[in-house]
Length: 424
Image (spheres, rainbow, N blue to C red):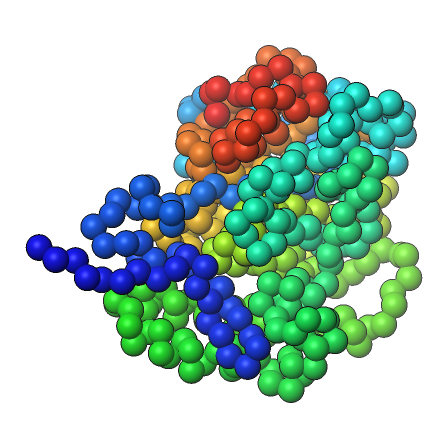
């Protein structure tokens, strides 16, 4: 028996007029008669960290029941469609990140587990876990990591102690960074304006490639390019509208529909980056600390920050829970999108480990214990479909360490970690 099929490189891209568009993993990228897990094309886990501010109303967050026999709480209900991928982890505490100046350092300590106001011990103390992971995981990807946000300002990723990586809130810039041609933003912008679509440059290359692929790969490439074109169109429309608004004052922000679109597009950028192996590490902050955004789309006209100081008022807690459920809804939409992205070995969500959490517990008290946190994805052997009620005061760093180790990062300890979470 002779096997002559040639396989495509995992790094293959579509090229045309200076444009290069990376492709998702195809069957044709796997050598004939070679088990997928034994090839260089074997999928490596991706890591993502999604931050939301001001904690959660605990009575509406914590699931009922533990282990696999648990019921989604009111806030977490939108995740029910991806239940098998969800791991809720409760009773975590980020003790090194606690401070009497919560809004001042709360974002900075979520992924560093290091109070910047306290002397550092160790060369990497103060470097965030995503960046420690990116040092190893980013060696074989065009981008070592990406850092996005729904609202500008602040930082949650640190590749040097005390020096935060900027969060990109302009989807157009994110798109051109991943897919755009040219050596500068000015060149990319000019090409975008002249053609309307980057994919027009690679049309001939994509048609030529499709003629050599099997039926399933042709469908995958076609669906992928359709997704890229849709995101490109949505990004251009959204940013054109934003440009027309000019500079907005620091007052309560409206336009909830546009903000939903902003979050969804930023999440889609991460999805496409993971699908095409542009990067294996991403962070995303949905809403900034002390945000004055309002959410009339869920009948909440009070600005987010004042509302978070609910004073245990049941009516305010009810409204705050609506906002927090809305945030989970957008995150769940992202999870379902990853589950729909098929690749060898399952879906992108099967090969991802994504943390969704906050570095605050009760927003009215500004305390940090217990932190609302959960994972979605089954990358690195994460079981999914369970609620892990950890012993009280379990270090939050244990969960960060677990994620990194399951993704193949060689690290034995992080922050105040006492060890990985074996039950995950």
